[in-house]
Length: 305
Length: 311
Image 1: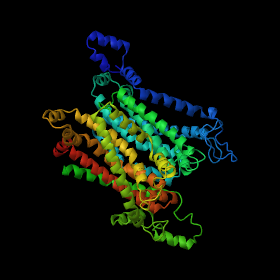
Image 2 (image 1 turned 60 degrees about the vertical axis):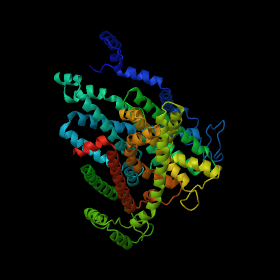
Image 3 (image 1 turned 180 degrees about the vertical axis):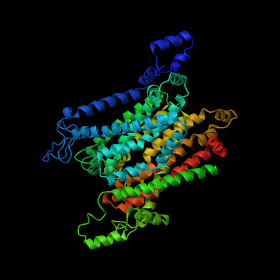
């Protein structure tokens, strides 16, 4: 009773067919996987994303130069055989900078999204499952927080408490959990009416066990889709803050920071703007296409937009 | 309907109050007083300054004094620009940012709705794919990248348009407005495409076609009204986004608007200015969310009847 039989199995008609499909385990996830593979843009996005993550993880070993290697005599040079993406005004290899910056940008994207996921899923699952007055109070809190202009608050936090990376993770995560909580709650509310949850209740499972074993796994589809679409918006937020000088600080770097340096000197050295910008744009593209593809594959909303 | 508006207004009040309170205590919790990094300040002068800005009072008295001033629309003096009040600075920046935001929104609406609706009329053709791919680029290309790139191409290489300023040289308003509006044009295109696709498959559209209305009349009279509800609902959040976007765009193009003042205040640690701007911008954002919710509800007959029923 862990997963409901997929719709496609039902539509083929005939009890024998349904059983056969159930035995093959044609689950919701397998159907989704087949649909996702047909979406070329989503596949390209997924593959690019995997490449980016692998490169980010291996950067300390595969980067062509060391992160703080300078060559002041060399200065800023356009792309060449020795420096594929050129060098900046300190003679630092831009490819190395972009690789290390990508580590930070991706880390912010994934960690802040994980924070949002953890808070949002728990909050939404508890509110939706318990229901009643607890639900009303919990969701009212979400409503009020929703109306707060968080973008301005994050800027304020960074100003008041200094430009701390950990705070940046927490602040961004704290903004993004709200939608996650709403999605999770509506999922749970519809799930708790289903027979297999009632069966679990009648078997005497505890509330916590039911939420963990039955409700959360079955509500995962929309959460996965929203997570995939949250990561690019978080990365954008980090880049936005870093561009303004309110996010990541030197000696660390990120794509937002590299773009802001690039924008300052673009008249003489346009490659310093273009390559970090390209890296950020490609990553956002991959994540958005993958997210859109997952949404269609998991059929999260009826209509495609 | 009135009841719906009243409920939403009542909900907005605690939100604004929370913003004021949270901002006030956050700013006061900041390490270091505002005059600590002034180079030569005699102890007496510092005390006099602190008295002038009421910093010598206990925290809760400062808070209530600030609330009292706010109730009269007084945001206090600026720490960094003595002799100028936060109100004056905000008033000087507001028209500029409002104009920039208005142009950006107009660009976003005209381009976005046109692209989205024409894509929805011929789904899965070139008329759909090309604008929607461009929209994806618009979403993935942040304003702080698009702005410098536009400056590089149209300002520096082609030398067609000025690269900074606001209202000084003819044409200098074009690049900032496009930079700010592009991402919203992209979102609006996607929203209006999805909305129109859904509406165009409804029975009442089939009825309209069956009774022999021209395609133009079907789309403009019957389709747009329902199909654009998601766009209207998006305008509230978009307004907040446009304000945040103005931080970047005004910094890139050196435009003397609210966003640039806010970023400068953040760097100068001009606490009253940060406090005042935050309260002002937040109130604006909350009010615009309210306005767009009410408009969306008013346009949607299903929601409207629900609110008449009094929920």
